[in-house]
Image 1 (cartoon, rainbow, N blue to C red):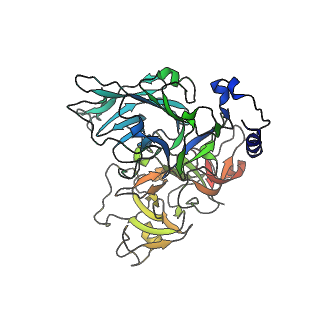
Image 2: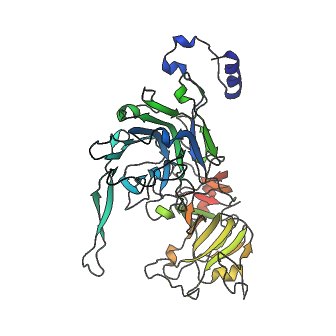
Image 3: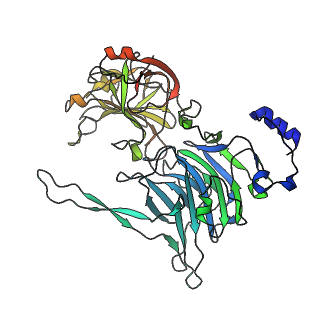
Length: 498
C-alpha cells in the first residue's frame, strides 16, 4: 500500500503503523489491508443497492452467500437480499408463525418458508441460496436455502380443527408439512424474473406491500458461479475468494489486489455501513443507531411517574408478527387503572375508538381489556397508538363537547395535540387488575398499517444494586436514575419521563 495513503487512513482511523511490503510477496489474505470492520445496518425505509446485476448470474447455476445478524426474530417478513428492479426475488425473514421464527424465499411467482425455531437476535448466521444445474431433458432447476452450512427443508403449517372440549371446543392444532423446493421447468417456467441490481434490506417499490423491511446487520455478500461448497463459505465470516467468485462485497474500507472485491454500493438512509467490533453487542442501543424514525418521541406518561415495561418488542406472548413493535406499560407501586396518558409527540388525532357508539363498534367478547384507543399521526408516515383506555376518556381529554363531531378520520376532521398533552385514561371494567397501556408506533405506507421499531428520547431508567427490587413506590428510592438520550425500554425496565 502507498505510504501516503496509509498515512491518511492512519490519521483518520487510528491505525498505529504503516507497512509497505512488496505486493508480489504477499498471500491473498495479506493483500487485503483492512481497517476496522464495517457492516450494513439495515433500518426502516433504507436500502443498499449493490453493483451486482441479476443478469450477471441469475440465468444459470449460482451460489448467493451472505452473513446476517437479525435484531428481531419474531416480527414480519423482511428481505435480507432482494431485487431492485422488476420481477421478484428475496431471501430473508418470514412472518413469525405458530411460535416459530421463519426464513422466506421468493423467486418469481413462488414462495416457500423455512422454520428456524432456534434463531437468536444479535447472533451472526451464514445464509446461502443456490440454483441447481438445469436438467437437459425437462429444463428443470430448483432453488435451495442453507443456514450455517445446513440445507433447510421448505415447510408450511396446516391446522387440524379441535374436537369437542368442556366447556369450549378444543383449540386447533398446527401441523408441520414438508413442501417441495421452488423449482421451474420448460412446462412450468418462471414468471416475474428478477432484474436490476441486488439490494440489501428492502424490496423494490414495484412490489412493496407496506412493510417488507429487514431489521439487522448484513455483511460479506458474494455470488459464485455454479454450486460452491456451502461448508467452505460458512466456515469463516468473510467473502471466500475462490476462482468461482463473480463479485464480493465486504463493506470495509479495504484495499485489495483482487478486482472481484472492488465494487461499490449505493446507500439510502437511514441504512448505512457502520463500524463493528466482535465485542460490540449493543449496536442497536447506541443513540445514533436506535430505530431511526421521522418523528422524535417522549414517554407517554406524566413527568416524574415511574412505569415498568411488562412486554417489549418482539415478545413471545403477543407482541410478534405485524404487532411486534409495541410495549405494555404499568405504573410502579400503584394501580395503573385510571392513570392519565399523554401524547408522545406533536400530531393530529386521526382515529378514536372510544365507545360502542363509534360506528357500531363493539367489544370483542374474548378481550380481557377494552380496546378503546387513539391514533395520533406524528409524521407523514408515522402514527402512535395508545390502547386499553377507559371508554370515552379520549373524547373527554382531546375534544370535549362537540369538538369531535364527527369523529376524526385518516382523511379529515383532525384534532391537533401537543407533545405531553393528555389524550386519555388507562382503564378497563372487565379486569382492572390487568390494566396497562399498550403503546406502539405504526407505519402508514400503503393501504394498511403495521408496527415499526421506535425509540424514546430523553428519559430516565432505574439502575438497582445487585439483589435489589422495586415493588412499592417507597422502593423507588433504591433507584439510581440514569439519563437515556435515546433508547428502547426492555422488559422489566423501570423508566420515567423527567
